Image (cartoon, rainbow, N blue to C red; front, side, top):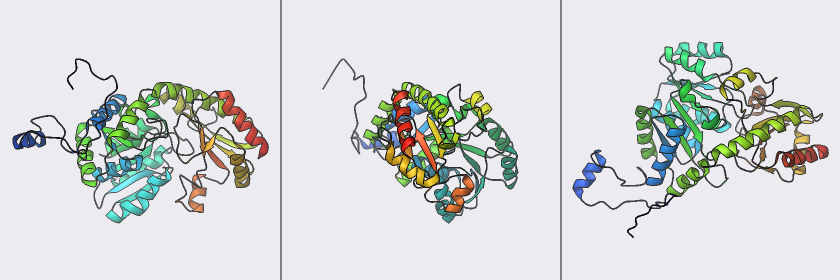
Length: 376
């Protein structure tokens, strides 16, 4: 219907295909002489809007959206490596990423060497073997250690090695890895970008030549984001600054509370002065230290079980970054694919709890934690 006005919120283009006027137009579209959409596995208006928004957030040339965060990681790597290449990866990566590297990319002839990315000397030594790229997390999951992206990017580029950063636990509001020298930054948009536990997606941002290869791989593998999911993520991003600000404030209050509690043996939070990368956090995160707090119960696994049962407002959930405060048990969820010994090496014990702060009142979050701790 003709109109002299436009919708303030973009409509949802829930269409798999688009009508084309002529065969000549088909050629023009495929060969770049005309702009438009053909097939939603190739591109879709809602997905394109999301990609433009994330590119602006990350100060990138372009970005590519995917059906999940794991798809973003997988397709990014597949577009950048080939059989016979090596990847250097952080030893504390998310369990799903670790599993992809060890059990799936290895079948394609891609070898991975894991290294503690907080140890710059150890990282530099791995670069002697001419890896194709280095994969790190800006803030590791679940122990919340920081990677010095600028230093690693400098030493990697001196050897012709590209740097890929999973920036999910920081978000573009706390950290923009491309501005620190990284080649690719990616997110599980399921987490803070979407922010409402109602969508699954991923996105990667980079230079145009890198995203072109990603886009081609994404089309071939069919790991594309659907229009409604893209619309939901764009909607979530509109409130991202407000949610991140409040969640970071809540996390700081929670970390301080837990650090003084007799039933807590350790608190992992970059905003605390005793955190091993506290200075780096101060220098790079702009005074906000993230919405995640990971802590260890002094009583171990048995205390963890009773603690989880004692919570009321805070829910046990396998994801993070929602508007609602949630907890997770890394040994049983995110890093379940690792053996007990592998978990122990990483410091993932049965008493370890990962808390993702939401936007509720800090006093309500603290009251629920106090009540559950009293029962554990």
